[in-house]
Amino acid sequence: MSEEKKAESGIQEGEKESLTLRIQGVNDCPVIYANIANITATPLDFQIVFGFFGEREPGVAEINAKAQVRIVMAPEHAGMLTGLMAQTVKNYMKQHGPLRGLELIPKDSAPPKPTP
Image (cartoon, rainbow, N blue to C red):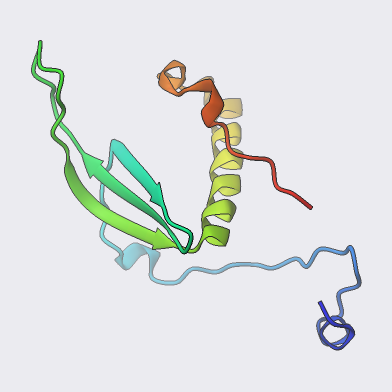
């Protein structure tokens, strides 16, 4: 950050800016239930496709899911989302106990640590 921008924002080197985010229209958005997600990435963006699948037929190894919504975001925003999701899940588990199904997630799929 240049000296000029630091002076304008009032933030000194090493300090964090505290922002409050107010999202308007939340109650006007459609509610979409998803029980499956697929995430892909390119050098320019991340895409998260949320979908829904119902009962799986016994003995059938294939699951057919219906895509409900696709979210596309910049890599920086995907990184921020990762941190927010991790903190929200941690808070949830503190209040409600461990999540079921985490044993299905590969151990090496943990989010990367942010670099300074």
